[in-house]
Structures are given as C-alpha cells and as structure tokens.
Length: 303
Ligand SMILES: [Mn+2]
Image (cartoon, rainbow, N blue to C red; front, top):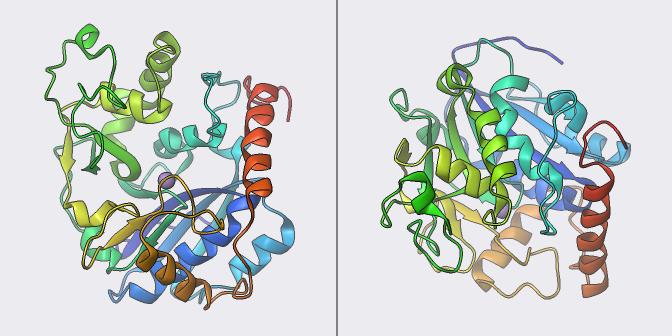
C-alpha cells in the first residue's frame, strides 16, 4: 500500500465481496468517467474475499496516473480482536467496515468519502468532496423512506432512551463524507459498536442505527440528489443508490431507467457480457452471508 498524502486528491472508500464485483466495476467506471476535476482519485477497496482474477480486472479499469487503487482485506480494515455485533439480519459483517475508516486510513488524512458498492456516480465527485464539513462529524443524505427517528418501520425504536426528539432527522449510511479527525478525537467507531451491542433488539439496520444515534444532529444534510434511491424517479440524480434488489439480478424491480444506466456503465468494463442472475444465486448469497457471519462474529477467530 502507498500512503502518499497530497492536497489535490479525493479519497474514496468502498467495500466489496466477490459476488458484487460487477457492481464495483460499474461504480468505479462511473466515478472516473464523470470526474472532470484535476484531483487524483485515491481509492481504498476493502475486499471481503475477492477472487484474484477479479481484483486484476478491477485494477485494469483505471489509468494509474489519475486513479490509485489500494486494496485492504477485512482483517486490515477491522481492529484486531474486535467483537462485531452478531445481529439477526442477512447483512454481511462487512457493513461494519465503514465505521473504522478513520483508523485504517493513513493518520494524516482528514476527510474520506465512503460509498456503498451498489452505487453509480453520475456527477463530478469533486463537487461533493469540496464541501466544508469541519463543523460536522459527517455529511450524508436524509433517508427518503425513514426521514425521522420516530419512523415506525425503520427508524430508531428506542429513540427516547437516548433523549432524542421524535422528529430528529435520520440519514442513510450508503454515502458518508466523513470528518476523520473528529471521529478519531471522539472515538466514534467504538462508541457506535458498543451502542449496537447494548441495543441489539432495536438495531434493525445495525450500522445505520448506531450511526444515527451516536451522531444525531451532528451531521450535515446533503442535497438528496447525492443519494437517490433506485426506487425513486429523479430527473438528473448525482448518485444512484441501488437499495434492496440490485441490478445484477433478474428480479430487479426498481426504476428501469436507472437499470439501463447501470448496464451502460458495465458496458465499459470487462464484465460487459454479464447477464442478470436468477433468484437461486441471490438466495445463496443471503444464506452464505448468515453462515459467514456466525462463523466470524468474533473476528479473526474463524477466518
Ligand atoms: Mn447500499
């Protein structure tokens, strides 16, 4: 890994397992194609078991002059011996990697942009990057479906226990522009993990629950165009977020226009001929996630 720290660079972090490598390819192409600023893009990819040939193909996607790719394993990304909350969802444990970004990135960095791998970036990412977040822990987009913590379906069930007002805004954690210095100063990652551990029964989207409790009212709300859910229909979104059913599946059931866009970016990658997968493959992934999670809940023990 190279840890050169320059001013004219944009630091982007994402997390990907082998099953989602096709999403990763489209994401990277979309970032690079739509980035017109002069900054070099420094990409950190936390790979949760990516096949070596897939890594190589990803590496070949970008011009090394303009984009640098740094690979980290899950073990590099998570603090040794950390006990991750073993919730009952089928979300993979790698959802927690985003919390430790301030620790696994070089200490001199002050800001990083975390993006879920199920996204397409259609606008110049440097516009987002240049926002001043010095007075906030992070910048994110209010969740279009949950909006406030008292949302009965997906909000924070026990928000009263934390002294939060019912109308406290709630953000989606698929995109996080993180103020790394403030996180390190206040040990935010460990506070979030401890909070999820202590409130497992209420933590439905576990990482999102923890982030929204610990950082309530301490984040900057971004233009919704920066995290447009694929279930919505925005004219000209800056970032599309393929929540729930991904466009790699035949059963994708969100905005068809965004699906077309996804394949138009995939066209420009070595995965140009890949076809959407059937339901069998999708269930297999969910089941594998659960088994993998149980095996490695005490990280480092089982891997
Ligand atoms: Mn996502």
